[in-house]
Image (cartoon, rainbow, N blue to C red; front, side, top):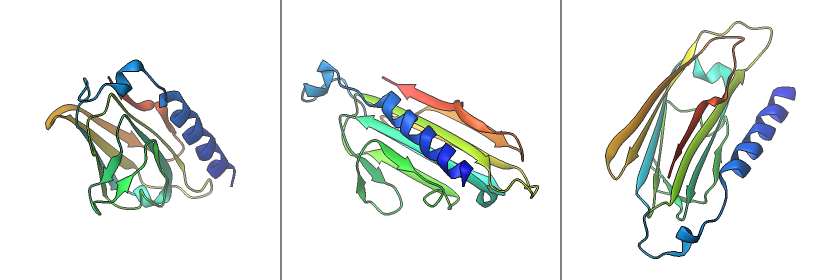
Length: 151
């Protein structure tokens, strides 16, 4: 239970860090860009508790699997991250785009096999960053390890 409270607190802090306003937000057809983020998981990822926050200031997000329109900031909990691949795209041009995440061990008494995240970010259809992270039982990936910001 303590880990769920920890993840909730981390998610709220990450969301608050990335939400803000600027005068560019009001410019129609402004300097924003179309973004896409793909989070691919492998290994024993179902044995860990995961959380990811995606922020697209100036537009909404769209779930790549369902096409559903989602509000920003979006907090993906362990439930939404129970699949091997999650893809989110902006529905319009975003002034700022950020991805931040955290992983903690699912059960203290059980030794889990490692898991991996490959996070790929695209801007206007071109890959601009690819980050691979590995998580081993007992080692925590915090928001400093998965903290990507684009402006």
